[in-house]
Amino acid sequence: MTEWAGVSKLSVILETGGQASAIYANGRNQVAVTISIKPTDEKNNTYYGAISWPDRVNLVDYVTGTKLNWKGSTDWCFTNEEDQYFHHVPGGSRAAEPELLDDGTQQFTFYVTARPGVSQKSIAAWVKTDTGKIYQTTQGSGTFEGKVVLNPLVALTHRKSDVTWRYSTTPTQYGDDTRYVTTKAWNYYLSLNSSDNYFVTFSVSGYWSDDGYEGFFASDIKPDNRHKNFYGAYVWPREPHESAYYSSDGYAGQIVNFPVGNNWWDYARIYDLPYPERYLCFTWVHATTGGNGWHIPNGPLTTWREYYDPTITAWDMYGNIGEFKIAGSGVDDGIELDDR
Image (cartoon, rainbow, N blue to C red; front, side, top):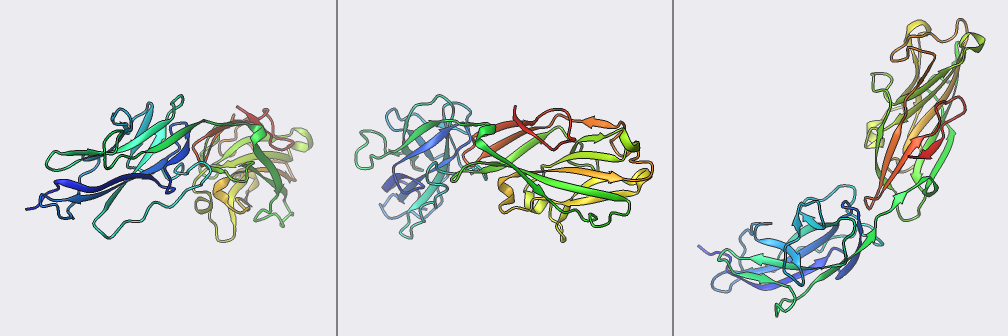
């Protein structure tokens, strides 16, 4: 039975096809590094069997030969698990990985991350055959010598000045029925103000999660006119946005939910701009009713004025973060964004 005994070709390359790249030093941005091996058996013929990795295939420091941290949390780290959000090359978006060859060459792709404070890193390939022989591309290794160079960039922290916070009116499912309730609604959109970068995922805390009230975070029912004016604010955090809030008629965000006493609820059209995964959508509502006004309690509403303190974390395509909050403690005049 043949076994892996040698190597006739060994190289290391970046996914961009080059030998150098930038990477954000935030512990999340991934740049892929591919090791190409043409293995041979004990008779120096091409070996087509499986190679165990990462046991037998690793990334090491080009100068010292020290292995990078495998799935670590300090310094330079690498893994064989691709992150669905942050695998993008700064300045080059997300490049295609090298194609597999048909001459017996086997390729192994690792994903490298850099922690804050690291210095430039030259990276080499290291392999160990089934017979125990080691081949590498480190400095002074001879025929196979080669490296890729990663240049760390200081991690970004996005602030309010870096984002776009805009709003526009949005229709509601029962908005044309004004016999009992008149509703006006506006969607607000949080996105990154950049032509070559965008937010890819969000985390939100500080809102009701009760059935029928998910995303509801602020309510103000004014005492004047027998509590006829309701102001409410909502955030829609489930991901992926487009499919999580899919509705055949487009009305997916439940709002103004007063089933007890008022026998009323409505739905707003949300995530109505292109590329819904790149922004976080909020809805602000002003609804007026007649008769004895809005009824309390209803769902989680037990007082005329309720307010959570929503906080938002947004990550861009390179794993850099922005931390925000909803400003103030009232929503009778729209929704305002602020830095956290």
